[in-house]
Amino acid sequence: MIDWFEDLSLGIRFKSETVKISEADIKQFASKFDPQPFHLDDDAAQKTLFKGLVASGWHTAALAMSLAVKTRPFGPHPLIGLGVDELRWTLPVRPDDILHIEGEVVSLTRSKTKPQGVVLVKWTLYNQKGEAVYTFTPIGFVPTRPETNPV
Image (cartoon, rainbow, N blue to C red; front, side, top):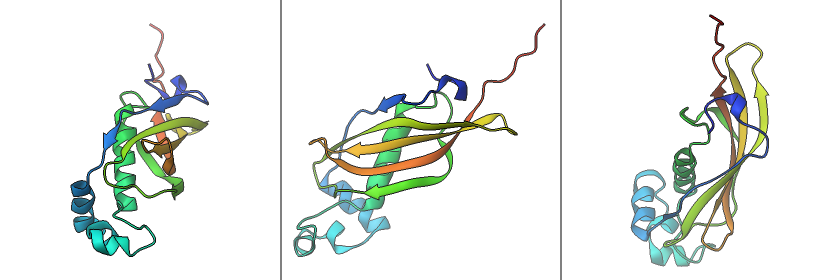
């Protein structure tokens, strides 16, 4: 069980459950946040380099974040970060894709001045074929174990 920064180690891996993305999901997200034809209109999407409807990259990112949070990589602590490194969309996400995320702790740095550590988890979102569709490495903060005073 991971409760504190000290419970993490390099190479620890996390894996989520799956989520299926529907055409309606793609169009609903796009209509609010990324209203481009290849996210909203089947016919228009056929005429693009995607050759069909695809999810917004930001929709893909939001799904990845949701799946990452649900794995609870930092135990009871929320996923709070300073930013994201190495964010890449490697393949389009299409209607009826079934996605899951896997993460690996690739860096641990304990703060010298604060009761926390900086953790880098490289996350990869995969489709049902095992193809990586999205990667990102957030710069996360995890609290260190509170010091206990001897009685």
